Image 1 (tube, helix red, strand yellow):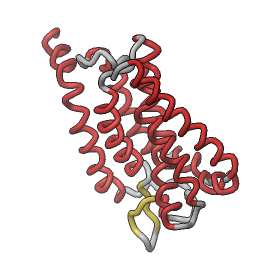
Image 2 (cartoon, one colour; image 1 turned 180 degrees about the horizontal axis):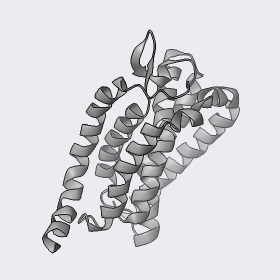
Image 3 (cartoon, helix red, strand yellow; image 1 turned 60 degrees about the vertical axis):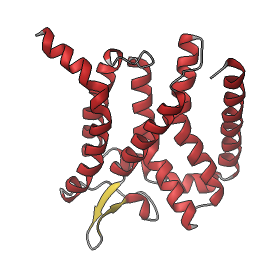
Image 4 (cartoon, helix red, strand yellow; image 1 turned 90 degrees about the vertical axis):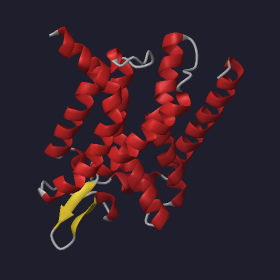
Length: 212
């Protein structure tokens, strides 16, 4: 991406973020409703464990991946933004689409998604290296797939009489469940994430094994 194109692109997404902020302020009652019980739902032990197991190796191995745009910093803040926002973004899109939340909240949900999965990375690399990352588009695609998979994984829930479902299908975020039936469904999303991250981690793991 040429510098003039980068400035136009950044100007567009900054404008979208500002518009999303205005919408969030105007729809603050709906925003509060979308967040009711959310912090409690994120604190489920199995969610924290899967976050540590997935983000830990990613953060440690990032500088050795062969991709010069990845380091400990962007690996850490992108994984952190994902667990904090992905379930809410997906849940808000689902609820707003069904009309149980104001449809205007679709814009903040999309903005949070794109900032977490792409624009935060772009901004950091632009600041660190002095140019817009040439990998911005492929990062947007790959990170969005991981973002959706993570959001669905950390939204899994189980309730008596309903079985396994996504927590955002309820009117509000309920206290987290630790029912083991979630594990089987969660494995599908975990395998997707592992499959996408394995090429990223394969070279540094191989080098560490050879060093021994």
